[in-house]
Picture 1 (cartoon, rainbow, N blue to C red):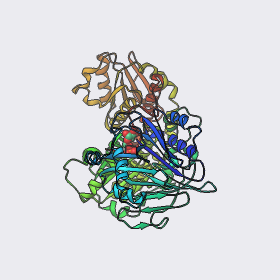
Picture 2 (cartoon, helix red, strand yellow):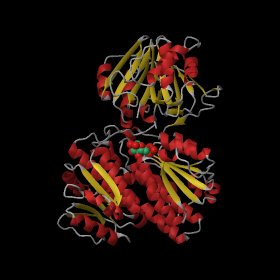
Picture 3 (tube, rainbow, N blue to C red):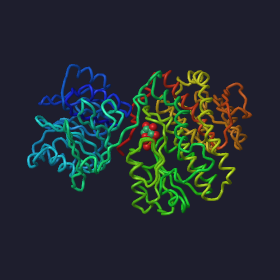
Picture 4 (cartoon, rainbow, N blue to C red):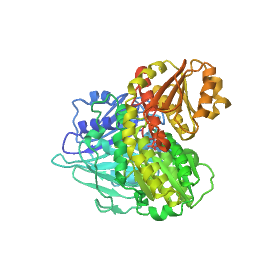
Length: 612
Ligand code: G6P
């Protein structure tokens, strides 16, 4: 989704803006642009890759600038809709959606402003320009103008002859970077990865904050009008991200890198429990012993892949802890009339911690009086983490590929820890059983590593899929969400229409679609449902469907004509979904490679969905 970088420094900031945008490419975008002050305004925009903008910017120098990658919401991807948008000598970049832009546009048209794009952002540029007629300076004008906006935004603004850049956030991520060393300067960006090139010292802005950046000073004013002096009110965080975390290294794509990083990501996430034989609820925050104590049911809220992690967790929580658990897509929950339950634990799962619908769903739950909130998230200090009373931070490291992989498996590890903790509190796990579950959990990195070794066979399968238009993924029990996730991965990056189904539902509809052109991928672990699943597979084979079965080493499923079988090295009981998702990730990755799609930045999708 849109990315923002802003810089004001004694050095030439053009390379900083370009490098920052390159670091934000993973968020998904369709056009890019920047505005430089010298001290008059230069605006450059291009449809397509940041590299094209970089070519246009070659030879430019400036000490003030704002830059943007756009993911189209209002208006098609085109140069005229690309940011920055300008009003006289003032330029704005924006991430988010302004809901009252139509009313504001009418007002500004009546005041004589001319619009040159279809975006909601251009309204912000003219509104600030208009407000400047009665405001003492740019900072005051941005404060007054943003007070009139409804919706979500992070913005950066500059204007000719002014030596400051003003930024503001409300409902979309934005952080400041405080320059270090002789190059100094001050910066702002949508996420830390964009600024690691210049600093590790970051300030996460709060909703409602407006900040002014100058070469050697910043000031932040909160929505309530009180001036906040850094670092007193907005703590400075030292980022622990390493530059290697966001480099491709030996890999061809971030998705490939992230799939192969899973053993390490799981190990890092599980480091939090060390060698403990028993879990402490404190793992989820200081207030957890009290908050988790009275929990009678669980409500999980999430979107996309994170929602699938929640679906797996439902099986674990109900089976281990005996507590009812429902899982809901955040964008549905936030708008439906539901029955609040203050004894319910609300769990928000999010890789980015910024997904607008997930954030809004937690706020909605809180407004309904549900205060027991837990964030399972990969980004410290993100909006969802800050919104929730409890937190568990996965340690997957930055996930750049749009299709989520290592974030998913580490979310599963975190959710399993939650299920065990709740089971213990419910008195349903003996010390021995708990220790056994923890041993299985700690073995996951090694087990996943072994699954990754299946890549050559999966690659061979992928070659047969690339020409297909549709695919069906089947699973049962706690592997049903893995079938959903396998289908999501394939459609996201290879653009093949894919559906995930519980295998038992096959004959209630999807069987009608099965023929030789519809590959059916089935997850067939050696569990209590295997025999039932085998009957479902027979139904497919009888209709001439081509079956691709991911079985366990000891699953009694044999390859035959039209049935291809790949065996995972270990049979893993409750944690088996964590292993079974890995070959499906590899399958979609290799199908995408054969098809030649843009693996890390699939068309129309964004990594961090900060708008509804
Ligand atoms: C987008 C991403 C998905 C992700 C979903 C939820 O759609 O492309 O990979 O699963 O958002 O994101 P979150 O950051 O909340 O997990």
